[in-house]
Image 1 (cartoon, rainbow, N blue to C red):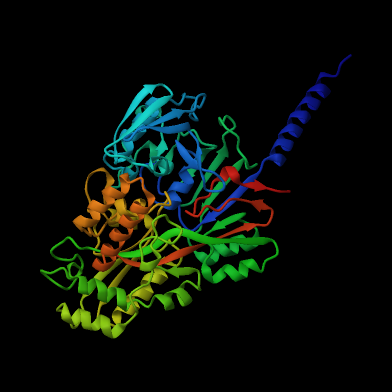
Image 2: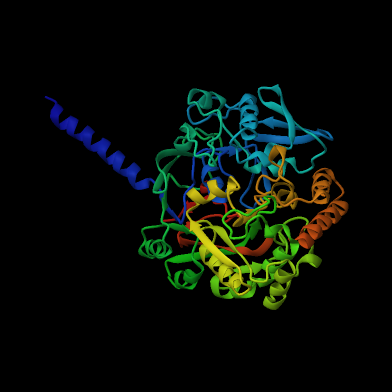
Length: 528
């Protein structure tokens, strides 16, 4: 006679063993960062950490491979069929996480959403005249003028599900400036290699491998636990104790300490990001200043005085511990269009700066508030403190307001600032990606969307348009140089430095460090 009770026990044991084996084989990576993605909405904030997190969930038509070269993603191929027309063939058989098929309708919907009210991604799509559907898996992107870098431009324009957004009342982007939230803030439905499983904003978010992903995932990670640890010392301690597998960024003062640990490695390299200061050059009177009825920043002598009062070499050595390269331009040498002959900064000269302020009518300086993040860039608050100390030497009193990026970005993106710090990464690796969103006069289609001080020079605007459509690289570089020289003479912004990337990881973890500070989890491999 068969012992059913014994058989049931064996079955239960077998199931438990299988679960235990599956659990043992599951690979989890614990990532610690000083900040968080402020939303799961891929069109809500054009900020590096935001982009790098959500692009593991949402995908673009064109992306970057492990060597940072352009590669097909949701588009399989593209070609220019006319001077102002780019045809993209879309990948077939792709499904969003909820099982909805990906089609041309989703691309057109994502285009309208990304260029619409509340979007922070307008500069990526605002230069398109329209997108036409040829069939379910073919589209034409039509530009206002010839635009040779369209594929490079759209590497951060994420595609969302039209059906999901409509069903979840998320057809418009989450507007960080107005504090508007919707379902896309906390939930996600992309086509990417990872799925959002649990979201605790500013604390921790869990992501699971998409086992129905259309493509091959190069790495072996099943789960990513992304944890926010704002305090540098706490984050470093968690890395040293083994509570974290990866951390970013490594505080510059702790690089050598982590390097000396035989279980860890520090990954370093130049970042495409330029850190700079911006000044309100539009208002007739500055916000938060003791100067009434005037805006000192409208005077180039004041802007130049600020520039020459900043001791960039001391900031490099003491604040950044050498992990920075001073810049005279608004992008680093790795970006197409860099002009070496313009790479020399104005000299640090306190007396010359004082003289300029006196000539401008401010012999005793003035008072102004400076807005700065304290959890975004490497040693950001410390840089701002150093700048404030430098400016005090020429009689300028800086009321520093350093705050988390959760409140900082809505403030400055609303242009509620007179003097601010910002960093910009030319993700297309081309100067146009700086000229158009940062240096052009604010206007439609994302033009000057991040030119928060409203610097304006008609000649720079004219050259920016010509750069966008010029196909002769020599002529193009000459135009870029001319625009940069005008901006430099105008002291349109105050460039500071190019950051160095500093990540830490356990030695058994292989990952790819992109020069735009992106981290694609599909490339992470954990070795036994």
